[in-house]
Length: 142
Image 1: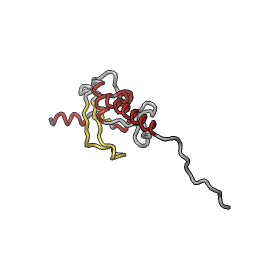
Image 2: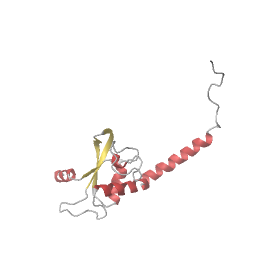
Image 3: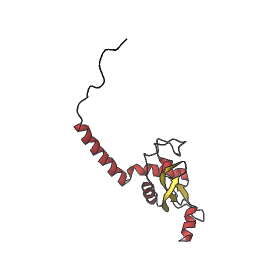
Image 4: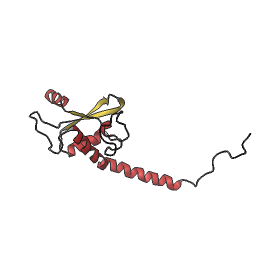
């Protein structure tokens, strides 16, 4: 167990904020906003790294230093001890971020959430009444 922990400490750190389209570069986003996804979670990033056949581990108790309310990060192994790539399609951190950002919106848990949100939105918009008159109409004083 101790040897595994030592190895994980050398792995690449991946915070969800790195690919969050809602954040600015100053707040910690590391890829283009057009390629980034909206509010990714550690679990989604972990599943995407597993899909890419990369060894990874979630650290739920860790927080992003610039925004300590963003809890959780993922450790990913890109290169083995001998220097060979775990997945030849992912050779750098930037490529990893771009590929994970492409996969997160198609994550099964995320698509279910979006469908539920659309159903709820449709139900609330159909029950809404017509436009109501607002404001205090009256003469203006001089």
